[in-house]
Image (tube, rainbow, N blue to C red; front, side, top):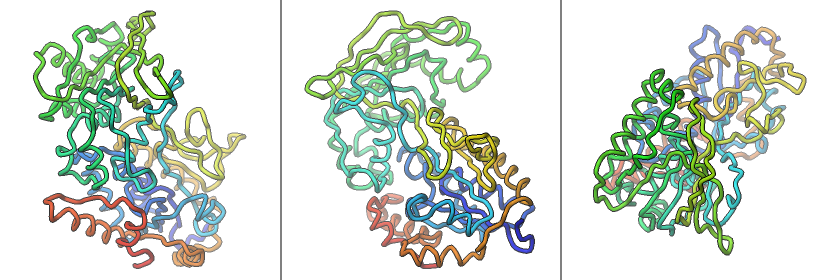
Length: 454
């Protein structure tokens, strides 16, 4: 049983939106808590820092709200700590009464079509990590294809298509680091083709993100009028969702307008199901799609009519996948940790005491960032309900974990360190009139953060 005379000690693994929302929900409860957020990167914010396109300042504004949570005394950030390598579940159980995993989803879901592994075929997550300056990926990216295909019709597909279609100079005012600017400045793409298997009413774009495509002075967005089609299921979807209707209306408007003369063409294709990536000498030389048609329910069936598209690079944006977490059960198919309302379940379906999940590792990579709040509230409600039964940490003092990390020689970063890194990135941008320039190299991030300092 936990000692009721001290705060409840909780470790949260993953300091992205999911983990920070969980910390916020804990601090808003009537229970006195002491929370440590563990993060693999030297900087916090996860998906917001490393998964959102740099020209999305509105979404990045979420950082302001997350900042307010991390500014509170009841929560600490411990960054540059890799769970499973630097620290184990047994270690965490020693120092904390409960552990919440909010590790997100950072791998690409596979797409089982021939040719998907050819040179020139890329996963969305890898490209996003590159243009977002993630320290653990290569510094260069091959951008020599003039015609590019993007598979998928969600916001990540739009981000990729937009970044590929914009010029490097258009993106320079954002926080992109120098290596990304150099890459994008020399990008050869002049045609970007986005492919969706179903119709306009089934697209997963959000209306605002879709309309943003048309704001660039260099991008001509083109929709084929023949791709505007709805069946009973599609019409029902439009009636039941304002967002679906707004997306459909925007696509309709684009399909009937005259084509302009902006230099880069961005085509949004519907009813084209990727069938095969075509290759020659191990490299992408085209994409073969099968034309589909609506079946009345909003789903589609193949028509047996195929078309080859002249592209030399393919990006698949068909969904993210969470990666297996050391010492926890994992559902490979769903890409989640088996759980009931956030309580982690073992193979027998029994709750593993004091162990919880929230965010995409809990429910899969679906929904917008804001949906993660509801997830966190559900998980935290379960944790607090279970708290009286916790075995309790054997070494719960807040300094014990710091001594442990120092003894292991792990150069961990802190919330105060983030303030130093933040100021450093802003100082890099200032001479160029930019809000910030993101630091890419892990060693440079650590140097700016000054590990261990309070």
